[in-house]
Structure formats: C-alpha cells, structure tokens
Length: 278
Ligand SMILES: NC(=O)c1ccc[n+]([C@@H]2O[C@H](COP(=O)([O-])OP(=O)(O)OC[C@H]3O[C@@H](n4cnc5c(N)ncnc54)[C@H](OP(=O)(O)O)[C@@H]3O)[C@@H](O)[C@H]2O)c1
Image (cartoon, rainbow, N blue to C red; front, side, top):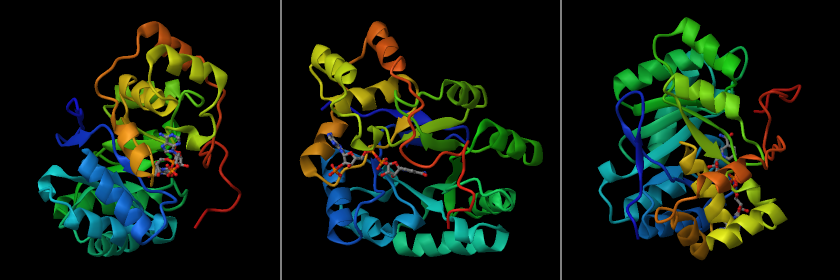
C-alpha cells in the first residue's frame, strides 16, 4: 500500500486526506467494527458528529485499535441544538467524554445556524485556546457565511466541510477557500452511492482500471481536498483507501469536472429548509 497523504491546515496541524465517514453508521457494533476495520486498513482519520449518535462507538474503536493516539485524527461536530457560546463549550466537553480520546483533533460547527453561528465560533476559539480541540472549522458554510466570520473574528476556520463531488463541483467555493487557506473537506464524495453506475463515470473507471468509488475519491484528492467516504462494509472500506497509487490524467480530470449538474444529495446551505434542522 502506498503511503497516505496529509495536508497542512492554516493552524499548522496536519490532516490525513482520506477519512472514514460515519453518518448513518448505526450506533453499536456496526460503527465500532467499521472504525476498527478502517484503522486496520490504514485509515488514521475518522469523521463523526454529535448528531450521528455514534461518538461513543467511535471512541471504543479508537481506544481498542493498536495505534497511538497522536497518530489518529478525530473530528466531531457541534449540533444545532447546542449552538451558542455557553452551550457550545458544554457540548464539546460532552462529545469529548463520549469519544474518550483526550482531545478532539477537529471540531466543526455542523450547520451555519443564522442567529447563533457567530457565538458558536467565539466558543470554538476559546475551546482551541483551552486545548480541548486542536483545530476548529465549520461545515456547510457558504462564501457569505465565511466572509461574515472573517469580518468579526481574527481566527478563520481551518476547514469547511461541504458536499463535494463531480456531480456537485462547487468550483467558486473551492477557489474562495483556497484563497483564504481554508481546506475543503468533501462530504458525500461517493454521491451517497446514487451515481455509481452512471455511464460517463463508469467509462472513466474502465479506462483507469479503478472502481467508480476510487475514481471519485481520487478526483477529490487531486482537486486539493480532504475526502470522507463512508462505508460499514469491510471490503469497501479497503477499496476506498486504495487511492494513493494512481493518478488521474488532466484530460480525465476535466471529463470528471464536466459531470457537474449541481446535484445535492444532502442539505443545501444555499436553499436551507424554512425551519432550522435540530
Ligand atoms: N457535515 C455534514 O453536514 C455532512 C453531511 C453528509 C455527510 N457528512 C460526512 O461525510 C461522510 C460521507 O458522506 P455520506 O455518508 O453522505 O456518503 P458517501 O460517502 O458519498 O456514500 C456512502 C454510501 O456509499 C456506499 N459505499 C461506500 N463505499 C462504496 C463503494 N466502494 N462502492 C459502492 N458503494 C459504496 C455506502 O454503503 P456501505 O456503508 O454499505 O458500504 C453508503 O451507502 C459521512 O458519513 C459524514 O461523515 C457530513
């Protein structure tokens, strides 16, 4: 297996470019086994969230795995009902207790909740100062949301985690984040498994001799992102990590870029629901 890659965030910490997603990984053995198997397969980065209800299973698995804590990278997220200054401080401590991993490598505001996101960010800056979180970032933030934070605070997010795949190629957001030294983390990078047999993707996959999932993950890496494929299936966990020993040519990258159809599988920050998801 070729060595995995790391990127350096704007706060100086390194982040492994491929992380295991755990949204919809059932609490209990399903999440435990997926996380444990992924670490055995070489993953060093796990992405969870308070809202996924599986932080304690992630914690059990990383503590059972035979890998030193400093070699692992654990992300969790502040859920909407906990947004605000005091509530965010408290929620972080609770997540950390469930994860039982000493510190959180990356803590993210899960959603840009209009009236509370700025207070939450103030708490995140404090949490980073206190050492509970090494790095802090956001998720589902638009360019306008990022500009607003920049106006109010000196500390910019290290990461913006958003839906990103060739069928939703958010070029403008990527360029904006690159210009601010904010790394994009691509969520739902496998299009939530809804385009695996799409003919143009399958043709590129055949040309490369790689699976559609591997092509999608490699595309995100070569576009300069961290990428978070989710699986609870042992074979697919291994498959999704075998992405460090090949390159996609410029012409095939362009053909993948051209798949863009603004296809959103998850929630759309540009068209948020009329109610705040809690
Ligand atoms: N911040 C946010 O608001 C947000 C939103 C969405 C997602 N995320 C994060 O991003 C992660 C990934 O996104 P996602 O879970 O929405 O979707 P995804 O990774 O794009 O797709 C996951 C789906 O693909 C299947 N799959 C995995 N590997 C496969 C392969 N090699 N071949 C065929 N099918 C495969 C999985 O099934 P099996 O499990 O059965 O393999 C699952 O049904 C999440 O788990 C979460 O950590 C964050």
